[in-house]
Amino acid sequence: MNALTAIRAGFSKFLEIIVVVNVVALTLVVTIGFASRLAGTPFSWYDEVASVGLAWLTYYGAALAAAKGAHIGCPSVINYFPPTLRLFVALVAEVITIGFFVLLAYTGVQVVLILEGSTLISLTSVSLQLTQSVLPLGAALFIIAELLRLPEVIASAKGDGFVDHELEEAGIKLAKA
Image (tube, rainbow, N blue to C red; front, side):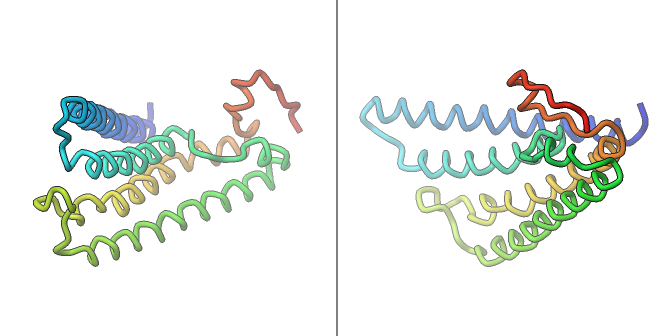
């Protein structure tokens, strides 16, 4: 195992821990909220906290998907190109994806700065800067995941092409170009 593979595996494990903690926390918040409503004394904060938790799960989960190469893509379309063009198309797709997340990170920082002094409505001790920090942090984690996967993307583009896991799960086999 080379150093980059070890770093990538460690990064994926780190993201998995973040996502599992988010899932457990969100499950607890929703369960507590449900139980409090069932008991007739609903907590005022649980809807807002659950919404924030879902946003966090979405952003950190997207970074984990990127680290595993499981985010939305069109591998079958890219595979129709010959290997020389496939590499160019794959790299352009990576540049566009990373560029989007650089923009998201930048605007996320701007949002966090604008929210200085703002708090959640139901929990005034919780800063909106904390809750919205997921924008730049999630984007940065996604960018790191994409950069760590870049050697694999290049190898797949130069080699036999990309695996389309959705078609594979559906039992559809595509002929190689």
